[in-house]
Image (cartoon, rainbow, N blue to C red; front, side):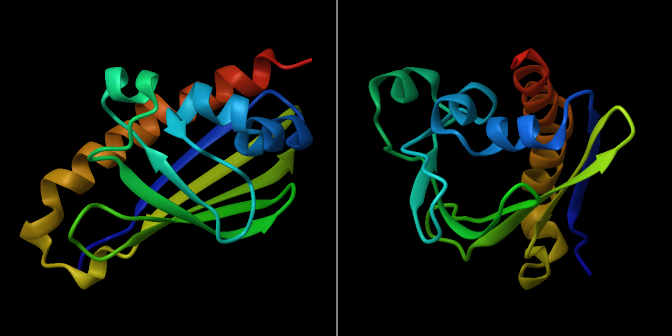
Length: 145
């Protein structure tokens, strides 16, 4: 069975500030590099890994995502749609801890694929969530006043 991608990080900022970084369009762009983000249930936004296309506002070959659940300031969930394959899902939950916020991200839906079909993608995404996106979320949230 294919396991979910799980990444956890602690951020030295109050949960409300982390929620702002997670949900305000101008801040989401800073840590997730997306286009057309709005924190509205059902809204579609795009993750554009190509920086030149992102800078131009071009969604060609971008990953289409749809907001599935919002529970401010606790939870943001969205679908993750690679072109021509079934969606997977990202669920980000925030919990208060002494001195800041505990962030748990789970990227699920991989069990619909064979292990070998997603091994490289899951490995790359696991690294990107843990080593790039969540540290960038931390930097944005901790920089807010």
